[in-house]
Image 1 (cartoon, rainbow, N blue to C red):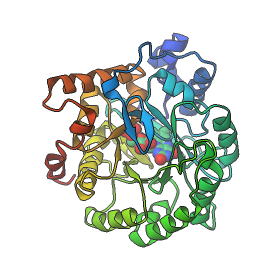
Image 2 (cartoon, helix red, strand yellow; image 1 turned 90 degrees about the vertical axis):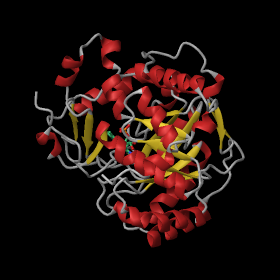
Image 3 (spheres, rainbow, N blue to C red; image 1 turned 30 degrees about the horizontal axis):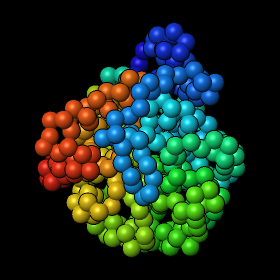
Length: 372
Ligand SMILES: Cc1cc2nc3c(=O)[nH]c(=O)nc-3n(C[C@H](O)[C@H](O)[C@H](O)COP(=O)(O)O)c2cc1C
């Protein structure tokens, strides 16, 4: 099967239905993904059997994370299975991207997997049911830390207003907000990363922020950046973001680069690349941000975490929390236990003995790597 054919994205299937990966791959990607979501909804999934080691736990922004591993945005676009993901062993889940109004996203096929490169290309285009269904679901069931990733509708005439609506509508159910200005699949969206546009956006968002009725706290505000930003532009972007009062950065979204791919049919698909080939690019970017912010701003490191070792590297490069999506597609839920084991082993080896001490120990080394 050609790597560039749309392929089944599902990691629960084999354990749940007794289907082999090969059988799953015969399903189209969307069907397999929906099946996975439904399977989680009906409660048929492997649960974490033991409580997490206390050394994996940390407090950030007044929230308690039982472990630093989150499900990245894009898996649970409609906030249907956040609690199940946490029950499975994730320390937190980020739902979305959610736009004010429902929208179908781009024409199918729009999801491609390359086994050979350990990578996914997607051009989903924010397919989602809109704010209200997500609000209702999270109101009913919001156990654990659930971040809400907000975006703008493709046909919006006022994108800033769409993000503001996200804050206004979803504050009571958001553990934190991620402002997604880095998807490559909504034309023009990444322009919001320019310092001027970002300053304006953050000004409008800050005016809309308020305490949650559920917790009495104002949900922290994070922005999610693309790994394709000109590195020379970073200091100004970060200074605007910090002046705009952000509480953290999610680093990074998918890349438009096709660096490191061997599967040429796959590489020709349009969209954002995730998985193993994104690791070095997103981790160097993370380390640069860690140094620019002098380690004072919590960063969520995401991109290419496909093993316990890569998760440890991500934390050492500067991530207080990590997220993954593509790694789960290829490795399944066993990856969660692998990552937890690898972090604890690293802490056992020392000299750092806490997660906080581990964050950023290799940032300088990573930032000094040659540009990709
Ligand atoms: C199928 C798919 C859909 C995604 N959708 C979103 C999205 O809606 N919003 C978002 O911020 N990121 C989205 N992402 C990006 C991921 O959250 C993550 O930043 C990226 O995949 C890199 O992590 P990974 O290499 O672990 O997959 C999506 C990724 C994939 C593979």
